[in-house]
Image (cartoon, rainbow, N blue to C red; front, side, top):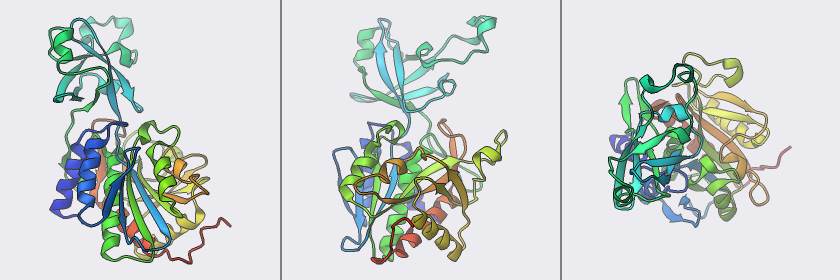
Length: 355
């Protein structure tokens, strides 16, 4: 399992605000950790790239996106109240009554999400879902001028929820999706560096996945790295809580191990390498089907350049896109072990051609 130092790094990574397009702060935390054992660089899209075994062949890319969902300040009214738009996919009901942490010009600025008290909402409107334009942010300012001394339009923010540890090796954070993937990528890279195989391994903390309708940072990075194989690490829906239909979402569960996706864009060669390695090392996994796209960085990476043999490894996650996403440390440990071992099984003779 993870050392106390690794857990401290993980908590710092999770707590550092960095919504899509504004990932520089958590990226810096990731790069500083990566520099302890890998050659590190960045690119124009904000991706952070760490490389080990640079003379190896073939090149394998590991990708986990470091951005999180957030909000962006769109307007400040004459009374000093702010209004926001979403960065990424939100259920607006989650925002009601929350504290927000904005990345202001002089540092963090905190605000609270305002809405009419239930007592002031007409009876016939109480059951209606709240929309983001109906919310406002109270910074404690008394005027537009006072608010503008702290913030300006375009400043990003996140929910002010810090990481906590739960019993039984559970970890709770607002930014599990998918800073946890960036952490697993770095941990797998470190374990591979301690006992490398033939391949060159390039770990990437990618940007803009939550808004990556055209591929985000992953598409840029896959083009410049030119890998022959890629493993994307993201989260998936855990189904081990009330109200979930397994017939629709599969068997992913907390402590059930990593989830391997099998489907239309997934390389059968890399999928089989992962599954065979899991069997050989007695790592429990489950399989998830994806008949079309995966809605992850894998969608952009697999069509980069002349094509990349791509697989997706996911971490079961409860309460996705909320202030309190929950994962298992045991699942993270198993995923890092599985990925490192799978990469060691790849040689210069590995044929990734679909057949």
